[in-house]
Length: 110
Length: 110
DNA sequence: CGGCATCCTTTAGGATACTG
DNA sequence: CAGTATCCTAAAGGATGCCG
Image 1: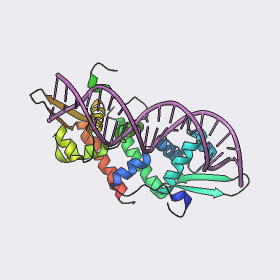
Image 2 (image 1 turned 90 degrees about the vertical axis):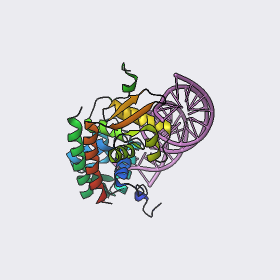
Image 3 (image 1 turned 30 degrees about the horizontal axis):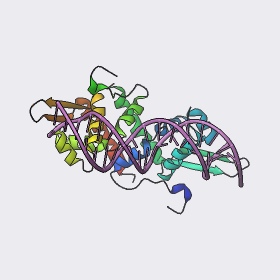
Image 4 (image 1 turned 90 degrees about the horizontal axis):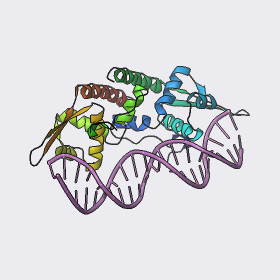
């Protein structure tokens, strides 16, 4: 556990490729990244609408995971009601590019 | 189920990227591909030695999965004892390249 | 609104033993 | 040698309800 409760889901060291896969291979994860890259910074509620079928719990799990590994940022505004926005970090955008490349390759070998 | 018992684990259609992730994100899978690309066509037993820690069952599961999706080929020689060799297909090699690209990206953002 | 806590079901994966 | 079969545990993920 780290000091910041939001950062306690960082993937342990090891083969870098393996880390990426552990980070991304959970259900919904790539879908979330896709939506964030299409939509720009998005609030929790809208994200849950856009990623159709995901439960609040799993969405939060994924976002925590991604945040802990610097792929998304979380912006919390303590208004009433609170407003929380998620978006891709620089690393997240880079990762997104890599995913699009894989997507391109995936498309032409069906 | 398909007619050929070796081909009944093909990943269902959907988002191509999602298919790739479902195919590769099981434990050991990328490690197996790595070994096959380093080592060339490899027999079941040696593969199990090279992918240290994997069980026979999981190894077979992964190979079936990869074979059903045309990433590896399986060569069976019905001698006594039988000799079975696995290797990367053309598609498998292409996929391997994509993985190396992801690996490269993964490496420089710790 | 955002998101924990809890519970429950499903799936993945390891251990072991056995066979053509 | 190259698997299957069986069993078991651990982890993932869905449903629901509550709270600041």
